[in-house]
Length: 470
Ligand SMILES: Cc1ncc(COP(=O)(O)O)c(C=O)c1O
Image (cartoon, rainbow, N blue to C red):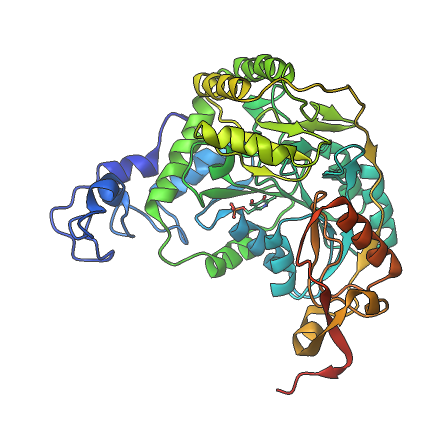
């Protein structure tokens, strides 16, 4: 297929309309808040609706269908779909499509959209704790051995839901996981929100895509690492995945008025990825600049055990309290903002453009002062725990909750999720039994000064006997 074509974007660009007699109300940008109009002008010309020639996302037969076919061909999927609600929409639709009450094995440090999807679909999840980095404590991923053990304890599992890569950029050797899932006749679904640039052409300079490793369904946020507009994402299905129910669920989750500027930018982001022929050089430019940056500050390594780092993620690592805040201030003084900081690291995300990467990395090198750092070895620490929920989501909906002091919560069931960062792995999930080890771990993390989302003196728990009055 001719991947330089952009059927949807081209149709939008050449739309020829003198007077708009339909929504949206800005009428191709002619009616708009005066001060903002010059800023929005160009984009509003693309902000169309399903008029003739522009197709319909929910039932594509024209330019959207052609654009999705090009996407599918590039990523070698059996079918691919545009998402205008981010990977969030894809994760929700995939979980809903798996059906209610099904057992799903889920990586414990999944994105919140996965937890929301499990609840919306009223599923029966089993949570698997990921391995962590021995020094930073940050989450890495699920090993194939862990997955095998989990599936042998729960062979009736309908699907396994993994995340690849992590926010920090560590990827899994997913071929092994796909083989384990096939042996148990279970579907492998991968939230690859941060890996839209993993495609057949970018390998081996960038990590292999989940789809090519054998995953059955993969969600990617094109807007995170490709040049697409925010909320632009896509969903790929492999051969083993039945597409009708996924499509039906997507129609429920996504707006009936999907954004054409976003969809058009998905079409052009796909063409950008397809036309890019300097993946090797891009990875080399990053590697060169990483070495320069490493003369100033310490970075999380390019691999930790079997977990390989995506070159687009640059993580400064420290054991010094308050250092990430100082780095952030140094960056801000030069008009730069990191993707995130934690007590142990600062994450910077790069683009795929060599010149832009060089400029960014050179600026980063100049911003930081030289620090003394001793080399230490990072190793994966095995993830502990395979947990299920005490109540079904349906039962939780009807249960009364109350607040108790943390010290008095042992043996009760959490009614809220508590997430320390790092490692970004929930300490407690809503619906889990509270054990003494949770209390000990909370105390340990608090002493270390780790930020805990939902960290108060009291914890919300379910009242064991009592249901809400309807
Ligand atoms: C791992 C992961 N999955 C899914 C999402 C949701 O993606 P989106 O913002 O495209 O909805 C995110 C967002 O940060 C994420 O980090």
